[in-house]
Image (cartoon, rainbow, N blue to C red; front, side):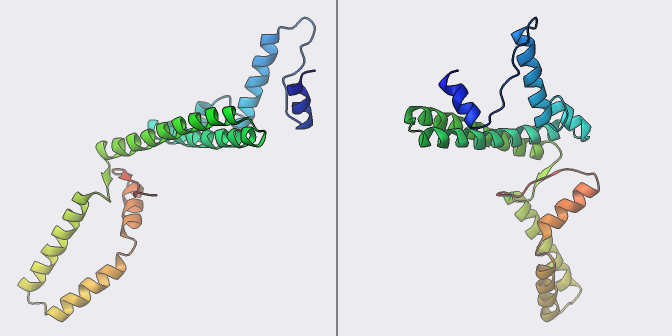
Length: 192
């Protein structure tokens, strides 16, 4: 028994089933790996199977889940890095840290590509400077109409103050309404 086997036994790590006489090592390891993957995906044989079972097998759901898996993998790498550091394996810790940085960089690029895709395919970005211009344009038109129909300045101020209070969560509410109507997708708020 090697040092690794001893450490695995002490940590109660699951190992592949022992090879039975007359069976191939490859079949046992492959089956063991497939069982672990199935367990990880809640009884489904793969990520795709899990998404299909949940009714989320469209391209966007797949992209979101792949991004989530990628970010989760950075936590696994961080754990490995911390274990290596704790064990005094600074070289291994540095290599893992570098790999984790690579995965994080890829996750950032994937998230950015997803946001760009959403904006370019029937979605719109509520945080874009263009959205602010559109919002100000319509509020200016409302003020012009108030002046044209003779609404006094005090009533106009009351209206805009009330509108400001009513629209405190306008991005969230608009996003919900657009998605409920089955219309265009709305890009998530920056930082959300």
